[in-house]
Image (cartoon, rainbow, N blue to C red; front, side, top):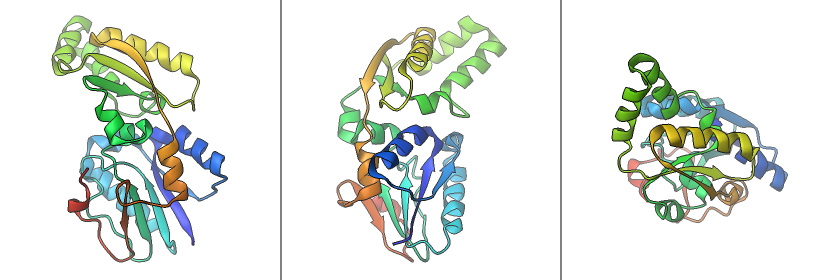
Length: 216
């Protein structure tokens, strides 16, 4: 079955590692991670990428629900397979249940750190505009429900530079640094199947992904 992948740049290293482990050579269409900040734009970009997968019989979506941006996606020719997770953090934690277990935790990944638009970029912009102390007060108030600043270590990137960066962010935002083990097992299941209904949403060709399916 002719298969292609649409994936977020945030999990580039992890997806390539999973594909390498499985010997998977499906073509990958990469989507800018910064689009997550505007779900409507992310939806339109995903749909265009699907439209570009002409002749495919199956498209694997290496994404989460991402603010319901996946609602309404469709393909006339391809079956769509989407992990049943809220976002890429849950995907790299291995499950929504495991991610929920880390309460009061703001997650970072190496891919997130190199993204186009992140909370750290916003903090840096605020510090340049208002001064660092005022920026700290603003962002510490925004993050008042968080206690920990976690690096999700998936084993797919050099750990020391990422840890150094997340420690610096944690200090600036008044949070405690910690490192949490990640996994690419969910991505390997996406690439290989089977796609159990409790873990994946499967949409047949010609059907539209309904918002009612985007429930955890």
